[in-house]
Amino acid sequence: MNKNAMFTGVHRLLFISMIIVPAVPLFLAAVIGFYSYVETTKNFATNAIEQVAIDHRNMIVGFLDERRADLETILALTSVDALSGAAGQAEISRILHASGNVFQDMGVIDPEGRQTAYSGPYDLVGKFYSDTAWYREAVKQGYYVSDVFLGYRNVPHFVVAVARRIQGQVWVLRASIDSNQFGRLVEQVSIGDSGEAYILNRDGIFQTDRRSYGELLERDAFSYPTHDESVMAFTGKEQDVEYLFASATMNDGKWRLIVRQKKEEAFQSTMAASYTVLLILVCGGGVIIFLAVIVSRRVLDTLQRQAEEVDILENQLLQAARLAELGEMAAGFAHEINNPLQVMKTDTALLELTLSDLVEKGTDADLCAEAQEVVDQFSIQIGRCAAITREILRFGRHDAPELQPVVLTTYIPEVGAMIQAKAEVHGIRLQFEVDDKSPTIAADPGQLQQVMINLLNNAIYAVVDRHGTEGGEICVSVKNIQGSAVIRVADNGTGMSKDIQNKIFLPFYTTKPPGQGTGMGLPVSHTIIDSLGGELNVESVRGEGTTFVITLPGLSNRR
Image (cartoon, rainbow, N blue to C red):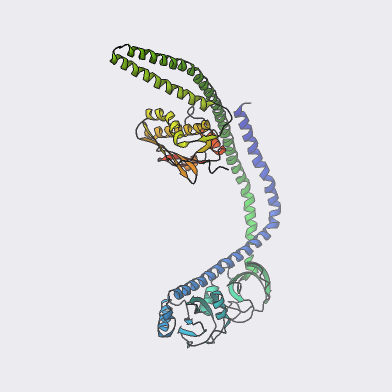
């Protein structure tokens, strides 16, 4: 079936479905909307007054917390000598004057409960507070906000007190807040024309005046429900007027902030909700059609993009298969090359014997020396070719991995020698820093070699991509960290972004151009290191370079 025809059919079906399917709930909304809007708007009004209560409570609590912080700072910064006597009197007066109109008066109470320093309009120096509830709670808790009371001054006020232990004794700094000023703060609530706010204590005593009726320190005659949560909403009738209430606890549960509004005003938006429902029904059809066009188009684009990705994945699989076949062929070539190398090695040995005979017979010494140099060079190059074919065979073998002790101080330089020539061709300085104390590890030499060569080849590619044939550097280091071998392959190549780093260990993901990478090197390397009980991680900065870190347990750390 033609892919374009298939995608066109899917697009058409999706577009029609996205129009027809929403029509059902839209029709149901038209039927039940009229009956549900009243309840919806009531819930909205209830939630709104609850939110007002929460916000207003937070503002009041913030005000009290600021006063507490002020007093705690003052008490913490005041020396012992300045807590009583003339010095204390002067210091408290200075502090009260500096605080503006925040506090009505302020005083220091010594460990016996006697006020030793006071600043304010009343004669309270020497007064004892050890028997008062607010003083005992302040000593016990370290901080206390009292209910409104008359006290020695016979004027409604409440106390904010903080305690501090100094030289093993508890001193209390207390300040009075004017109830009228605090009441004006509480009354600042914005909720319609009939909305008002006030505070009650646990006994239903007004802690602030109520705008409609209800004086400070009077008992509210209304019966409020039990407060079993932080904030609650309810309705009730008082003096033939129905109200919508919201109640929020504060001051450690000793106070409850009441916000109330006449019910008829709170629910007057119910009629507006009916028009909102009607507007939704009128606009709903247009919105559904618009979304159907946009979403169906995007789904179609996604399907087409995924189909292209599948094609790319199939090509990558074919390329991986070709590379696997190439590996098999390389192993076969290595076997074939080994045979003439052995013949050349035997002939070289025979040539050395012949040359020895010529020397004994007195043949020209310079000529013999030159011939000996050629023979030595042949031996060296034959040995190199043999080593290369051995490494190719070991790299390409498919036997089950055999763990054996690997001495990294000699193994890493040997692996590096295989890639040294390639690095030099590209003008890259390849250096090795292997700690003599590097631990011996248990690994399959062939698999570990596969990992190292893959990391080095990737590093060479990244360095050449950034620097060309000048200025490239690759450093391979091995260190012993708590008994584990930490191998770092660092380059100053192009580096990688965070997004690419999150994908490099996914199979078939590659940043190289088509035909230059399969996306399997790093996933396979990660699998090999993981099978050895180690970790393979990457550290990279775009435009600066990349470091791959291999951590393998030493023989002493393996379990």
